[in-house]
Amino acid sequence: MPIQADMQHIREIETLFDRAIEKFGAVNILVNNAGTILYKKVEEVTEEEFDNIFDSNVKGLFFACQQAARKLADGGKIINLSSSVTRLMMPTYAAYAATKGAVEQLTKVLAKELGHRGIAVNSISPGPTDTELFRKGKTEEQISHLASMAAFGRIGTPDDIAKAVLLLVSEEAGWITGQNICVNGGFIS
Image (cartoon, rainbow, N blue to C red; front, side, top):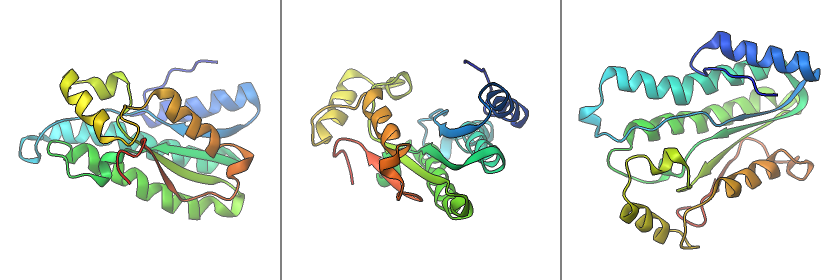
């Protein structure tokens, strides 16, 4: 059942949860994967750009987690998408990396806050993955270079990331919480 919501607006996040609960009786899994990117040196980032990337990558995720803390079924799962760039020093990625660092820290804190309800909270840090967002602003030469940095010599696919999400929401991952899992084909550890 598709429900459209702008993750920068708390009311729309609340509506998203409420409609899902009305339809299915409960929400068991939350995957926070909405986001945007900005390639600019720190000295060039405007206040508006800073606010936009933090609203997209942190505010929406934070308030979706807040709704999950209030409404997710006991034993549920929360997966937050971060990025492997938090482990690299890549010029022009500062604002983006800062948002993803915030995602990883929120994940750890929320795991402790919700653990008593059996809710597992983890984050996944994809490496270069063949999506529209990843390709934005990159040449084929840049993409090939990033692919060559991975142990598998390629960039990831959305399916690679989806399989990691499926693992973390499965029964097999029942003892995993508060973790950040790098899913990047050996791009960086």
